[in-house]
Length: 322
Image (cartoon, rainbow, N blue to C red; front, side):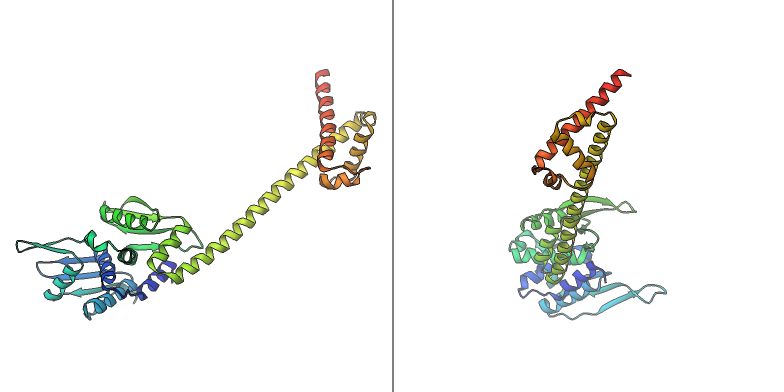
């Protein structure tokens, strides 16, 4: 089972105690994956996810005391379920559902259908959390956090995507929306997040606590691994820098010896040069302890830099002579 399917399976098990929250979640699902008609009253919900259909079945039963059949469409030659469906055709039941989720308004005896729960029915934070949960069940997906952090909600209606974005922002969760064009030219709007900490917050809002803990564990492992890698890279860079400096120091000292200049230098520089030649791999601090009397790291560095500077001056003079 993919991580996305795991999250949806967990959300399908969570049923709000409050009726208004159950209506908000049902409305979000109906907005995304239903076909609704008023003339010949029909509500049909289709989904490739068994978790979505299971949740719709539970919400209808708990909220309206309705039991309905679940239809399965199997893929050719595979024996696997390709799509799940729930169909409602009783006019009284349909009108009650549509009225309670706020999809139907009536003026002068004329009923108007709008696949959008009114904003006034989504004022409470608990209802907005339920709505976000329903929207993810119906049209959301989340990547395996071991690969990368990404969660998204799809919508064919830009206004609906913006409203979901506003709801998330109300919980201090920032998201982005981009337009994606499908093969047949139809646009779909993708609301997405890529920040691991923000995705944890989304799972918390939706009450997917078990999946949240799994994602947090992955984040901890990743953070520790990244910290170790940064430390190793830093130490490797420092080691390469130290080795490079030591090689240059040895080359400079050997050049001074070849030119017969080393023994003409002050005693402290001669001593420093021989200590470096005899201990090419030692760091500056340890080299200082071999001198008589011992010298600090900065003192060793100063003497070696002076030797290198003298060698460089000799090289320059040699080039000028040529």
